[in-house]
Each structure stands twice: as structure tokens, then as C-alpha cells.
Amino acid sequence: MSSLIEGLPDAISLRCLAYIPYYLLPKLELVSRSWKAAIRSAELFRARHEVGLYEDFLCVSSYHPNNTWQLYDPLQNLWMTLPELPSKRRHLANFGAVSISQKLFVLGGRSDAVDPVTGDRDDNFSTNEVWSFDAVTRMWSMRAPMLVPRAMFACCVVDGKIVVAGGFTSISKSTSKAEMYDSEKDIWIPLPDLPHTHDSTCIGLVIGGKMHIVYNGESTVQVFESSEIKWRVEDYGWLHGLKAVVGDSLYVMSLTQGFVFKQDGPDWQVIVLATQFLRRIGMAVIGFRGELYMIGGVIHSNRGNGDLIKLSDVRVLNLRDEKPTWHCAAQMSRCQGTVLGCTELRI
Image (cartoon, rainbow, N blue to C red; front, side, top):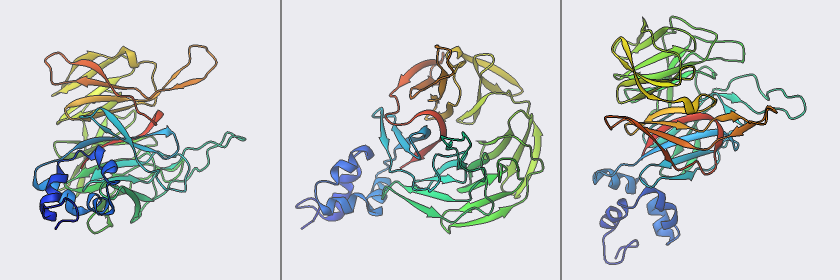
């Protein structure tokens, strides 16, 4: 007799539980100890995959509150809060965030906390710490550290491996070092250095299965050729602004012109007006499930006293229709203000 559902073998019971949406699993743990063990087991998630059930979530972390991540479920239009990231650094920021193998990874960064007396940052030096959140056990764990401490760097998943490159080892020292992480073996492998480095923030975007690194204010793009383990330099003439990839198409939100552009070969196509975001700073822009999400950020108060209003709203640009339109998703329930990390997670 099954310890999960009376009258059913455990294997069948797990298949039944596999159809339960992820957001309900914490409540089902309260049924019994055996249900809790089953719901936090790898067997349940293998059963989910066997029946073809996957759920896509958006992972977001902002400056407020400290080291907190939330998951957005687009089907339920709701936010779930994860356990606090157990890093000893307060307000970890300028880190890399990606997901692989049902795990959210938070890599590197530095403290963005401000001393209330002096107004100085807590820590000018970057860390090489790597944390992962396991969606099965719903726990954080520390993984093998990066070979080079870094913050404000490019971070992507390429061919099932995490690739990091560039960034700053301290607040004033940039690096051209690159490395690759194998999550199954929990090891880091050095890669060839970037051909060019700059004293500015860089981001990584995956287009056509290749990692593209672009520095703020620079026109050149450095492309990682994973088959040959080398970098090549291109000048694509990308527009300045907040960049995101939907499918294999690059979108840019220009905060000076108030438009969202789509790259169309060598040209740029105006997709939609976005003047409602011109006053906003510190927001995230990410492609998710065929749409473009604008999340959080801050705006200056109309009182003229320099105060900043922390935002938690989520605007979504529907790109599936012939004429793209904006709509609102549920606001973040805990996170607000400047977005520090944003990525998607498949469970």
C-alpha cells in the first residue's frame, strides 16, 4: 500500500503529483511527512519531465529588501518569494544571474550597501562566490568559486555551460579574464582572454546560440565561438539603450528617444512608443515567453527634494500580435526599486 495515495503504487502517485503546479507544492507539503519528502525529491521532478510538464518562471532580485529573490509565475500571474540568499555581503549587487538544470545561479558581485554614517559603500572589492538555488529542495547552496573575483560582468549559458567574462575585480580595476562553469562537475575552466576590455559595465546576450558581449558606450561586440573556444570582434552598430533578446531577435529600449527598436538585419525597426519609461532608472528589461518585460526601477519624486520612488510594477510588451501592445502583470509582492538581477528559470 502506498504511503502517498492509498491504493496506488508510489510510482503512480508521483505521476499524479507531477501535474500539480509548482506554486502549490509548498502547501501540499503540509499533508504529511511522506508528501513533503516526495515533493522535495528528484523523483517527483523526473516524473514531471516524463509527462512533459515544464513551468517557466521569471527570477528577479532588487535592492529592497536585502538579498531577496522572487519568482514570477506567468500562468498564475503571481509572485513567490525564495529564502533569503545566505551571502554574508549585504545587498549583494553587480552579480551575474543565470539558470541551468532547474537551478538559479548567482555569481560574483560586490556589496552595494551604504554606510549610514559615512555614505560610503561597504565593499569596493568583488567576490568570486557562486550560489545556486535548487528549485527541487528550495534551498541555497554554495558552489565552486570562480577563478577570478568579478562584478559588473557578462554572464550567459552557452551549450549547457555558464560562461563569464570581463567585469571589475575591484571598483576601479577591470579584467579581460573569461571562464566556463560545468555544473555537473562543479568546476571552472579558464577560457581565452577577451580581445578588448573597457572601464565600463558589460553585458552578455545569447543570439543564435552564441554569446555576445557589449560594453556600455562601445560599438564593438565580442562573440564567443564555443566550437573553437575563441573570441572574435565585430562592429554591429547596435543602438545604445537597454537590450534584451526575444527568440533570436535583439530589442533595444532607447531611454533618450522613447522607443523600442528591433534589429532587422543592418537596420532598426521602431516597434512601439515607450515614453512612459523615460524618467525611470534601474529597471530590468528581459525577453520572456515571447514577450518583453520591463520590471521595477526608481523614479525621482515630483516634490523636487531628490527623493526616489521605488517601483515594483511589471509592464509587458506583447510581441505576438501584429501591433505590439503594453499590458500590466502582477506587481512584485516583496521586491521593489533598482533591479539587481533578472533571469528566467525552467522547472
